[in-house]
Image 1 (tube, rainbow, N blue to C red):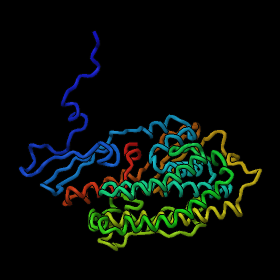
Image 2: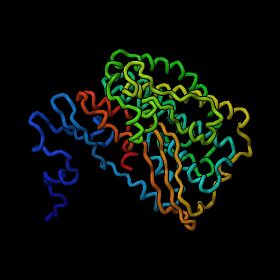
Image 3: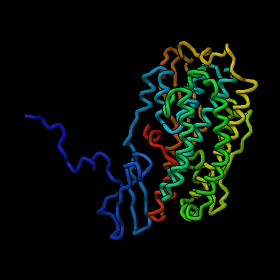
Image 4: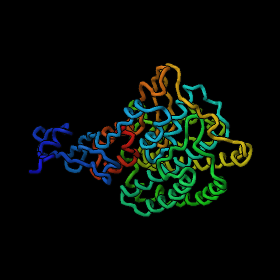
Length: 404
């Protein structure tokens, strides 16, 4: 006789992820709706418990835990260098940026900050900004899908594919790279990479003008996003929002400028903020407009990095990107927090080490998507039900970071 391994019980779901609201306590005109956790509804495995009064939203309760990567427990059972592939899987759309933040934190504990060859630093910034472009292309393109525009998604996925192929040529992977290592890089840029990258940038500049005309200045897009999901600046600060979500509310706060890590202080770029040009400062339109402007700034940074990598810091026969890799990463006993500007906001890592082991006692990731998600209920109350997906999409969540 075959043993039954699973017995269906309709109460399983209620016990595993109970609703905050009980249907028996709702007003007669209110309903409980569940959006997600299927991906097309909520940008990842996120469930939104929505209380609606007809077409109006009374409250939204985010339910997490459907992905549950257990990143922090992995990091506390592996050597520092072995954790990098798990870093890639936090914000899997911006793995280079996440690696950069983690590695710089470990290097600070090892007193390597500012001591690496400039070519390594410029390569790191180059690949991080390429990945920032790719991440923003997904954010803007899928946001078009959220509100019914298919062409923008196809155009941006086409241009993102060029970046994916460049990064695949660089390290063999399309999304999860394990390229930025503690004390250096996995490998130098392939011969001809700088020239190919410059060709791509020259191709992309007029495409960004087209994207701006197709999406951001489109009358239908403006009507669907302006004056929707307004996030006041004080509320954004109180909830710990960062990245385009915070800058869309009008605050010029970018860790590449504020903390000045790597070679960013040597580069010329602006920090776009929302100004309420089409509606109110901090609305869905502003958040997306900031992302489009940040793509232009990333292009400027990439161009400057290429000038350095083909000029003062060009490749030489004796350059070894692994020359400063420590054989054993064993920092002194300390507590350290290091943060960096990811495409979605501030990604930070808290480390606790004992000075004896190459495995940390504690690693805590401060995920920007988690904080940005927490403000969704505040900016959704009173909105139309049809605008909820537009509000969630404008925040640009990735659940690998939220359910870390």
